[in-house]
Image (cartoon, rainbow, N blue to C red; front, side):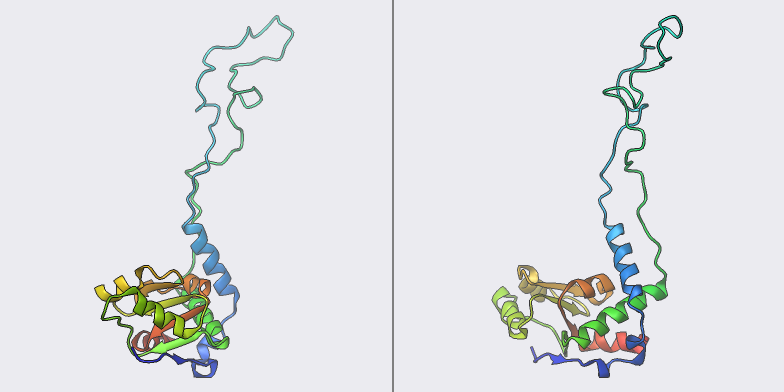
Length: 197
């Protein structure tokens, strides 16, 4: 593999540098909401077992009328306003906003000298140690590696590298770009991204 070249902010198109950072915040918020497990769930009074029989007569006891011992104010009763797992947490993000969020995330990396462009990312040996030496040579904490199409050997090489994540160009999004401290991107993917602006 050839040596990655550092991309400066001045090399990016003007559209990348004029994006308001709030677009990135909204996209990351929506992304995190979409992967939420949504497992919190409580039973309402209709779902709790028991309580079919009226606990005591309607009149004559001097007590307030009750229809079921599974009402929320009884011990062992249902929960009145608890969470439900049929809730939809998805948040809408426009196409344009997604694009602007990615532009800002990439521009931020370039501004901090964390954006690298390389002609081709290929580990022909398929060995993890070769991928690791490539990552270590960058001197970064963790790296998002963006390749146009992942071949089998390169996939095997990067699979067990803890501080690197290999993705194809169609998976590249603002959340991943913001989450990793640095980005290594193939030249073809970078050119396509900058031409779209």
